[in-house]
Image 1 (spheres, rainbow, N blue to C red):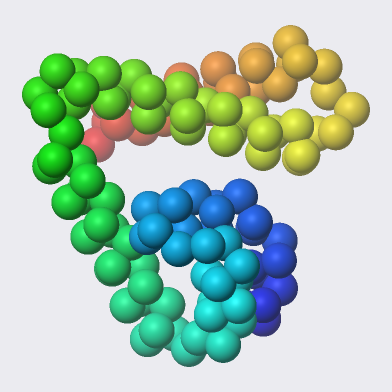
Image 2 (cartoon, helix red, strand yellow):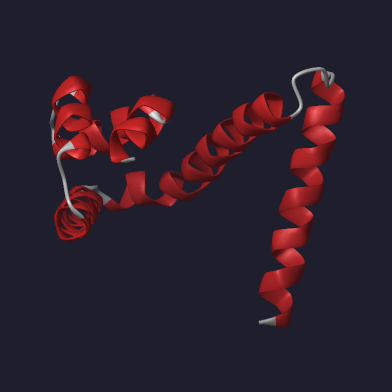
Length: 111
């Protein structure tokens, strides 16, 4: 099952590989052979590497990291929306994205 996951999720695996400093093929191969404990271990290592990289950023770069991360998340979400609704226009996809962002904001306000 994990091999199918890795095959279907090349982009997230490539992003994870970038943070871990690994080649995508190596991560995909190892994901297919991993058990649940190994997945958690890899996830923890990747998260730790992200924290280390974030701490090394100078303060002036940290200020711009938030908007860049938001833009990146929007691009990834838009790609998912396009995949979910292949016949939708760009305008429709952006409206769905806007609705999802607004829904998330409402959830955060009530939490």
